[in-house]
Structure formats: structure tokens, C-alpha cells
Amino acid sequence: MLFTRITRLALNTRSTRQLSSRASTVLSALDIPTTPTELPGVYDGQWKGSGDVLESICPTTGEVLARVKSASPEELSVALEKAREAYKEFRLIPAPRRGELVRQLREALAAKRDELGALVSLEMGKIKTEGVGEVQEFVDICDYAVGLSRMMNGRVVSSERPGHTILEVPNPLGIVAVLSAFNFPVAVYGWNLSISMAAGNATIWKPSPSTPLCSIAVTKIVASVLEKNGLPGAIAGLVTGGKDIGEALVEDRDVEMVSFTGSEAVGRKVGKVVQSRFGKTLLELGGNNASIIMPDADLSLAVPAVFFGSVGTAGQRCTSTRRLYLHRSIAPEFLSRLQGLYGTIRAGDPLATDTLLGPLHTRGALGIYSSAIDQLKAADAEILTGGSRYDEAPLDQGNFVRPTIAIPKTLDPTHEMWATERFAPVLYAAEFDELEQAIEWNNAVPQGLSSSLWTRDLRNVGKWIGPAGSDAGIVNVNVGTSGAEIGAAFGGNKSTGWGRESGGDAWKQYVRWSACTLNFSDEAPLAQGVSFDA
Image (cartoon, rainbow, N blue to C red; front, side):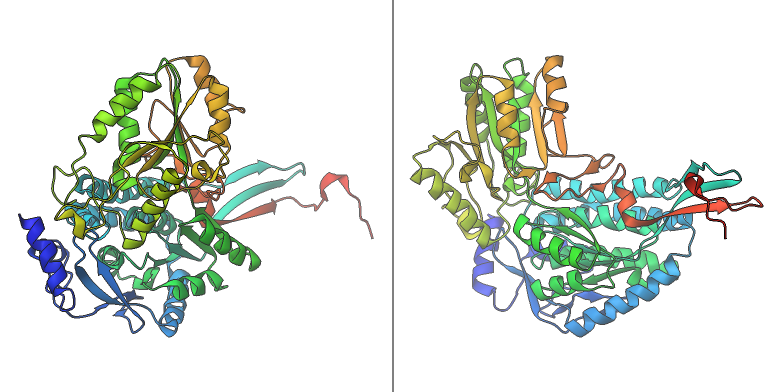
């Protein structure tokens, strides 16, 4: 098999980076060199890079796809200076004209949608349809931002003083730093860049150090649009790097806003640092998402939705279904059907069209999975399916694990098993008797990203979406926890960070607001009837 030959090649030639034909085809389609040359990972209008070398490693085969020269501290400083100068020019361009740039970016991305999607599958590990879907999400949010560029409106407020009016005016904010995670190496940047560009900001992107090729490929496309329009490339800069580059961006007082996607632990540090210098943050952190299945649920819809939510992207979405609460009356049937679907999982090369399960992204993620399984076994939980790595060739050369369904003995929703997000395909299940009990369990964890209720009873819906219902940022009914659209604001509450990206009113975070009182009368009265005559 080709996949088998690829994994052997990866093991035998890792040090010389002799790429497999599988990898070479994907990279060549995006004009990424396939020779052993180290690639520049910094863009500020020019490509450069003299910092630490990052390795992009294919999680499917273990082969080194590329070596990328990241940003040095000096290059980061220059990139920020150029971003500031670019912002001063870009903010003066009328918003609808900025929207036209985003429209051109949309067309350029759409032309390379399948190629970029394949790169996401190659470098991150998600299956082909999800990789292409991620790029489509970037295309969709560009469509949204084009229309938004003509509707970033302020408000006219009535004044109590004669001959006065009050305006609430949005203006460009400045520099927006986007620190994105590995699991959505294209879409998260797209959510931020498209809205930030429409708002008139300069954006500087620090991607995950394990997905530098996706960021380089996207930045090349963005840069080509800017260059075609005679605009500075630093409007959309790129600085690849590790922890030191991320920390420097977060700490820099010239960065007005930091959009961070990642773990709760790191997000807590980011929030404190940016707040200490009175900057703005947009935090998208952990998700420990639950699906609740009522006895009147349509199981023909609910079971496949939970299957995708728990297994899709190998459990590495922030909206992945990690907790499953089943009404006692339908629990046996639901679990039987769900185990049946788990039995159909086809693990393998994510670039193959019939694959349903790709690898975990890194070797470190294997440790997260193994730790979760060890904890379940130590607590004498019932493991219905999964619970181990794939040990047969060629899957044993990649980061492949068996999706797991487990029934812990403890029902305490604050127990570590229930309250901790684990970025792996491990689904924890429990039975309940009343909806109120399930809602209490849903809300008992620190995170508050996505949640899902399956019912056909309108009274249940009212409870679920009301003041005593789910406290998550995404509260779905007869829709799974995973797979949000771009039209509504995306984000979560509590330790998920309270951030909102993409649609809805999320754009209002990317501007600075001013209340402007205008006096067009011949007098200057004070508000509230105050008299202060000299």
C-alpha cells in the first residue's frame, strides 16, 4: 500500500527530508518548496526568518514536511513597527474599499480551497472533508466581512439639550495580534483577519509552532492580494515561533488587542498580562461540551450527531462532544446504536476520501489520551469501546488512537474525569432521570463553550435556552455540539474565556468606540440642568 510505503520512507529518511510523493504533491500545489531548504517563516512585506528552526511533522506518517526559520526578537520588533506604519495608511481607506480587498481575498482563497484543505489534512491531521470545510469557513467569513464593511455602523443618540446630538462612532483599533491553535490552523485566523481588515486594522499572526506550513500558504495568498492593490504587506503580517515570540506579542504595549485560542491555563496568563497593560483580549479557551438526550429525542438524528461530535477531528475540536448525558429510559438503545457506529470507524490517511478518523496531531497528544484511559481504568470505569492505540501497521507509525466510550462510576460532575477537558476522542457517559438534573451536570464544569439538547418537547426547549438552562455560549437544540456556522458569534462563557469571534456583534471588539456630543446651537447648556455661572 502507498500509505505503508510512505511511513517506511518517513522512518528511514527523516534526517534527510526526502519527501514522500504524497506530501510533495500537496506542497507543490501551493508553491511550497519540497527541497531540504529551510523556509522563511516571517512576513512583514518581505519574507525572512533567522530565529529557531521549527519542524513541521506529518502526524500520519511521522515524516518531516519542512523546516521553517521562525522570527527572532529583532524580526518581531521590526514586524510590529511595519504593522504600525501599515495601520496608519490602512485606517484611512474607506471601509467599503477595505471590504473590496476582503472580497478579492475571498476569491483567491476559493481558487485554492481544495489545495489548502489538503495541506490542513497533511500537516494537522484532520480528514479531507474537514480540511476543505475549514478553508470554506475562511471563504464564508470573508463573504460576511464584505457585507459588514458597509454596515459597521455607530448610533445616533437623542440629547436632552436643545441643539445637541450624540453620536456613538466606531473607528479602527490598531494592531490585532492573532495567536491561533493547531486544531484549526486556517479558520481561526480567517475569523479574525477578515473582520479585522474590514475594521481597518493591521493584523499580525502568530500560528501554532506545529502548523507553520498552513500559515505560510495562507499568508502568501493574502500577500498577493495586498501586493496587487499596492498596499503594505504588513497589514497582514506573520511571525512563526515558539513560546518566546507569543509572550513578546502578548506583552507588547503597541498591540491593542490580542486574540488567543488555546488552553485555559495559557489563556489565563494571556488575560492577566494583557489586562495589566490595559489592552483588549479575545479569548477562546477550553470546551468540555455535553449532549443531553431526552426520552422523546429522534435517535436517528441524535446518534450520528454525537458520533461526529465525539470522533470528528479525532476529538480535537474545542466543540467536540466530551460528555454524554442519557435519559435512563433510552440509554441502552442509544449506547447500542452509538457503539455500532464506532464499529464502522475507518482510521487511516486523512487525505483518503473514505477515511473517517485521522491521527492525533502530536506525540504529546498521545500522552493526553493515554492518561485519560489510565485514569478511567484506575477508577474501575466501564470502557464500552476503544481504550488503546492502533498497534497494527501502518497506523502504528502515526498518532492513531481508538475513539473511546466510557461510563465512569462517579456521577459527581465536579470530579476531574468530568470537569477536565481532554483533547482526545474520549466520551464520558452517564444516565439521568430529570432534565433539571442533566442541566445541573451540564453547568457544573468550569468550561462553557457548547452544549446540545435533543428533544421534541417545546417545554424542554424553553427550560434549556432560558435563564435556568445551559450556561454555555452555544446552546443548541437537536443540533450537535460541533460544527458552528459563521453567521452567529462563536465563543463560550466561564473559563472558556467569554470571547466572541466570527459573526453577530463580534466585529465590535475590533474597533474603538467614541461617544461624540455635537453642539449645533448658539448656547452651551450643561447636562442634568447643572448651572455653573461665573
